[in-house]
Length: 480
Image 1 (cartoon, rainbow, N blue to C red):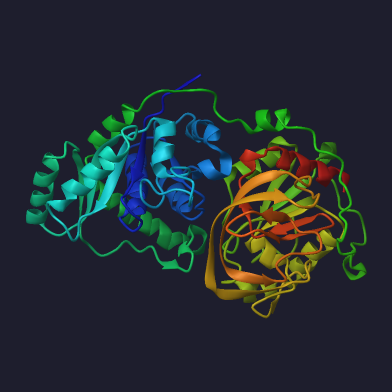
Image 2: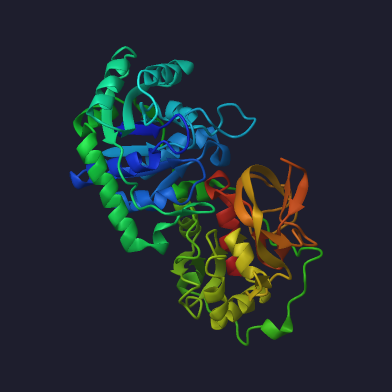
């Protein structure tokens, strides 16, 4: 199979140069021309893809060579870009910045090479003139396999400033494909972990994406950018397919009782068995809404391929789990922002506790871990785990190489997975009698909790790297 979707990678010398504004604006501007635009984000970031989805009307997808492996970048890209006229890939950090201590791994440059895609460099030109040529020359010549094919100048102060920048870049041989004037920032508020997610500010986010599109339309040569995208090299290989990878993954071993797991609390036992959906399928309820915005689209696709009916619910609004719920996935987000509202929804907290104490499989990552705790910043949570969670001054951030310590609804002990941590909270204790993961770096430690069917941890993982996780989870839904 040959993949020939026109594509661009939008990169920058460093964070804060304007990548998100330009990439999102380009997506929206091209979509407004009637093109089907496939949005992608390099790295583990969950928030930018929400803005990309608004811009294009398609699911924003991540391309992370650390979490998924380099061999999955092109197949996952092809899966997301199937049937599209154009793909725009927003980079992460600086063009050559990747996983700490791992060389180019997970960098925008590496992903661009794996996709054989031209790179457009977004440069903050606000405090330079002729020096911009030296900067662009350095980035364009650092790795001959990375094709820096154009520059978009951001925060240009005046017509004279633009003229000086263009004259300097004429000598570099890298064409200027856009020039955005210095202006009031587009309304994209941020807080402790980046931009505020779309789900928390839907109407304002729509306005912000519209403003980005207008900036790009005024300042960029869309025809030249599209022509550049059409010159991307062909890729060979098949697109990733959830059904195929689930079918080819090893069959899940039978569940093994976890030593050291806390016994069920009789106060939370349900009075009757959980109902099944037709044909023996189970509903897997996935937390969503403003408090739980972090998820990879491939997770739901894998669960569906494994035989589950995936239904989203909002812990801020819904007082009961979806009918027929046999398993629960609670991903990342900002529960600390909504702790009082989550706590006030006592009927749902009790329903979650009943499901967990009945032995149903529950997969909780980061925000999900906090929601299952006894309390979060002194606000009562579900009480499934006997831990206390609170906000912290310290940011925990980085990739992790992990191994499953305990047999769980997700994996057998010894399963290797790579993950990512990104939080300003702590839980005490940090691990249970049956920990979820052993982490090798930056320090050796165990973390997380395996308790009956519950697997709760700070670690964000990408199940495309281990599709057997979804198969095992759904099988556990059938047998629990």
